[in-house]
Image 1: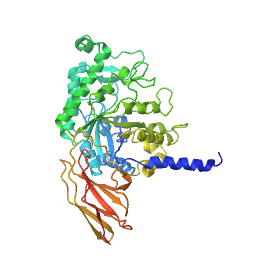
Image 2: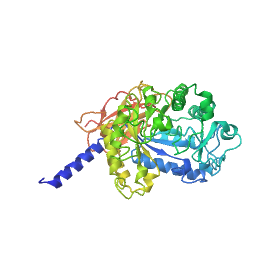
Image 3: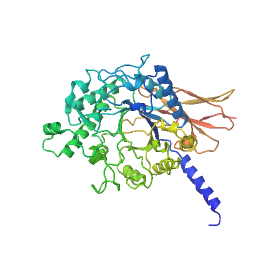
Image 4: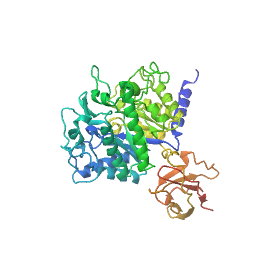
Length: 494
C-alpha cells in the first residue's frame, strides 16, 4: 500500500463517524450495586447527608456523560433501601440490619426524585431469591421471613436462598416487589440473574422437599424452570395491574443455551440460563412477560467460550418483540494489564457493533468501575458515543398515545433567543420536551439526534447561540417517552 498513513487516518475518521452517529432513541444506563457496598453507599454507616451527596455525585457524572437511566439495587439480600413492613433496613446503609440511616430519610424516594429532576429513569433492582449473603450469619430480626419461615430457605454454597419451588416463598417475594410498585414512582422493576443459584461443583441444591410435594411427576429440571416461569409471569401481570406504565426488565446471564444442547442455542460452550439457572429467558420474551432484557455480555470479542460477536446477534435475533439492552462489563477494565481490557477499545467496539445490530441500548456494570479506570472510556462516551441527547425507546405495547403538540413562540432577549411554549398535559408525571434547532436551509430531521439541543421539563429554552437565523421545533414526551407531533417552527425574522 502506497499511503498507509492516509489509510489509517481514513479508518480512524470512519470509526469516529460511526461512533458519533448516535441514535435519538437509546437507553444508556448503569447498574448501581449496593450489596457489599460495591457502588453505593461507598461504605456502611455514612450519614444521610453523605449518602445523598454520593448519589448526587453519581448522577451528575452520568448526566454529564450522556446517560439517561440508572438501575439501583434496592433489595440486595431480603433487606430494604426504603421503609418496608416486610423486610428490615439494609445494613449496607447504617451498618446494622434493621437500623435506618441517620438522620432518618427514605433513600428510595430521594433517589427517584433526583433522577426525575434530571430526566433520568429509575429502575428498581431486586434480587428476588437471595436471602442471606452468608448462611452462617442471619442479621435479620426475629419477625423476618428468614427466621419465621426457615422452611422457605435453602443454604447452598455459603449463601442462603428463598426456595423458588415453594409457593408461599414466591408469594412473599411478589408482595415485597409489588409494595414498591404501589408506593413509589419507579419507572421499572428490574431483576437480575439470580434465579436458582449458580451450580457449585459436587453439591446439590437442597429442594427435595418442595420437589416431592409440588412436582406432579415432572422432571426436576422442568419443574424448576416452571417455578421460575410462574414467578416471572405473575410478577409481570401484577406490575401492570398496579401501574400499567411501569416497565419490567431482567438482566440474565449472557448465554441462554449452548447449541450442543439445543439447535436454537448460541455457538457457545459456557454455563447457561436454561440448563444451570433454570431460567428460560427466551420463553419469557416470546410470551411477552418482560418489556426488556439486558443480557450480561461481559466477554470480549473472540472469547473462546462465549464470544461477544456470537452472542450479540443471537440475542438480537431472539428479542424481536421486546427491547434489547446490552450489558457491558466495564469492571473488566479495572486493574487490567493485558489486552483487550487495558484500553477502552473493546467496550467502544462493542457499543459500535451493538448499534449496527440495532440493539436498543446499553447497561454498564458497574458505577464505581468508572472511577477506578482512566478517563479514556468516559471521555469517549462524553465526546463521541454519547455526545448527543438520547431518550429511552418508547414501548408501544405499554401505551402508544402521544401527547398533543406544543405551540411555540420566540423572542429576542439580551443574551439570546428565548423559545417558549404552553404546557402540555401528558399523564401523571411532568411532561418533558425536546427542543430541536436547525440552521437556515437545513432539513428538519427530527430523527437526527445532532439536531436536539435540549431535553427539559421547563416550558422555555434560552439559546445563547444566536449567530445564525436558527429555526426551532418543540415536541412533548410523556412518561413512557411517546413523542408528540412537532410544534410550529419558530425563528427570528430579520
